[in-house]
Image (spheres, rainbow, N blue to C red):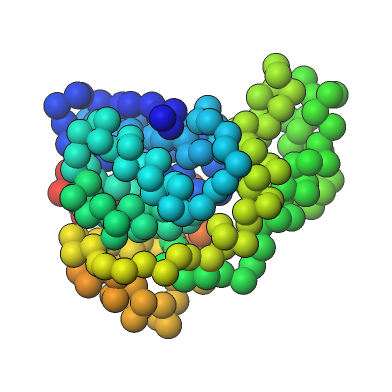
Length: 252
């Protein structure tokens, strides 16, 4: 089963947070701790990320199945918050297993295929000389030499195991499965529960042209944008993101 961390009282409503590509549950620790006053917040490491098992495949069917197994272990239904790749996995989960999901928040992603690649970041991480690394800052410096911007340097190195001199990311499988990660599967059915598509106002990941496809799968979908936030909206505007979660999930 997937590795996960819990914050908050056991009898509180469960909020499952699903990270995006190259992330892990630890990226969400601050928001999880802050929301633990009103919820049992569970941050998960998806397959091939963090402390979770490495596998030979990385499809959205795989990821949704992983999440379903975890939710059944935790006790369904739960609120689900998914960002980017985690948002796609959460959407597949909700459509295929609606009984497991109470309310759904999809953060800055749509149920469509994207043309931009993320492979350049795998190339940059592979270029880091792990044998010479004694602290995260040294890896960040090497990522900077590869043209990775400072915010992403810090983000990526949260998945660096410095003592073991290894990435906690299955870079080989993520590279081979990149086309599938950027796409979105054909789904039959709908999730009729309350759904919020929460986007960064400075991001172009969720466009008006995507709304018909969104509504076909999530007829109750509502839309909101966080001002001055990009794709990593929870990092750009953490307090505003948290406030949106509390309001929509009725946990304020």
